[in-house]
Length: 91
Image (cartoon, rainbow, N blue to C red; front, side, top):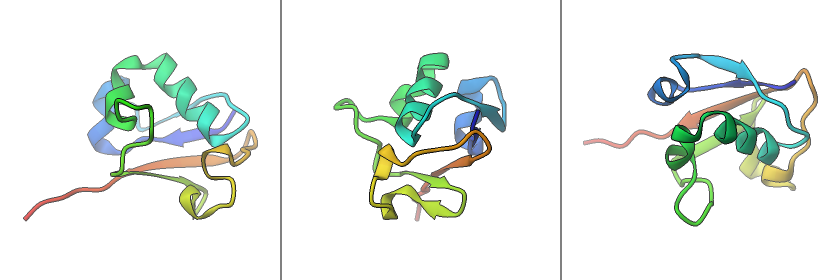
C-alpha cells in the first residue's frame, strides 16, 4: 500500500502519526480512504463541495499532482509515497 506523509498541522487528527499506509489505486482513492479511516480530518482536506482545499497540495514522490495530466486520478503503486503539504499564511 502507498505510504502517505501527513504534515504537522494535521497529525493530531490521525492520532499524531507522521505517516501511514493507506490503500488505493490512485491519489484520489488514497485520500478518500484516509478520510474514511479518520473522518475528523475531512474538513481540513476537502471544502464543503468535496474539492481539495486550496491550501492543500499533494505530491506523488517529488511531483505535485496538480502538475500531472491526471491530477487526483494519477495512478499509485504499492511502493509510492504521497506527501500532503499545507500552505501557511501569515503576516
